[in-house]
Length: 134
Image (cartoon, rainbow, N blue to C red; front, side, top):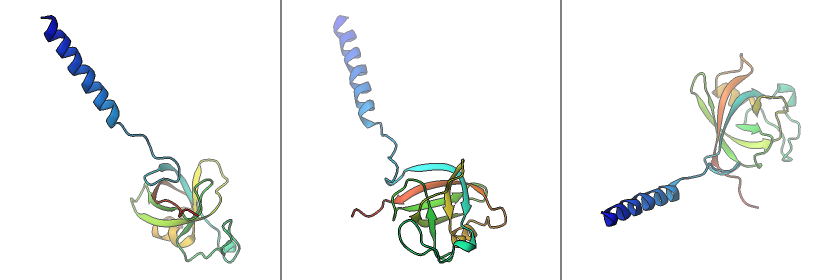
């Protein structure tokens, strides 16, 4: 009887240890799969032609975005949570600096997500390609 109890306890312990080894952690910011949700806004047309934080010139027709912390060159998929439309953009600038907003998109990206008239929309931002290592 004691041997059966010991074997049962050993089986349970090994199962728990194995299950613990299979758990995964969430990707860190900037790593593939990192996700966050919040509100998106888009750049004003008056910023067209001005320099962005990464040194490039802002072009409202390109698929770019501003994020407070993701490294420049990170590719993210932004999904409008109301319409389920998505667009892939490259992080090229810093911002937005308004509480509750997680990303500022170029006009072209905002049009793809169909929220130009709304101005602000709830989104999910997911890293699909980390920034190149320099």
